[in-house]
Image (cartoon, rainbow, N blue to C red):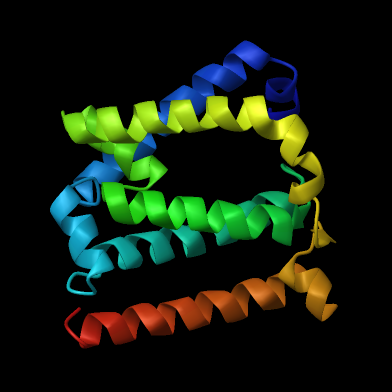
Length: 184
């Protein structure tokens, strides 16, 4: 089924759109598309965002590795570098702090009518992407500095993926339990 989907670009776009709408719906139902919830997370007063994102990370990690293990998917990690990681993290962090939304929550907030997320978030992301595309030829050599390839934790530690998945899942579950018991 997935191999047939791989050859159908239109179906991929439709599936991506539907999954994106579903993701936005779940973000909204989890209350993480609301400015006050996100700002309170940044102020360390409300850990709803962290709890939802950690839960999604563990669920996705297990789901992806199950699909790979069943032969229904293949992992193709993208190569990275310090030249992309550091500027990208800084731009993301500054934008998140100023706007009060990350890219996913900004689009989800537009879905429930937040005009600040539309003007500052979605339009800002589109403008930023256009500026990046225009400047990319001049930035390419800088972005490749400190290349670390397509490293993954299992490769770094010389382990099979499942032990790493299980350890990370247990650590995140423990962290979620601690956050919940602390009343955060």
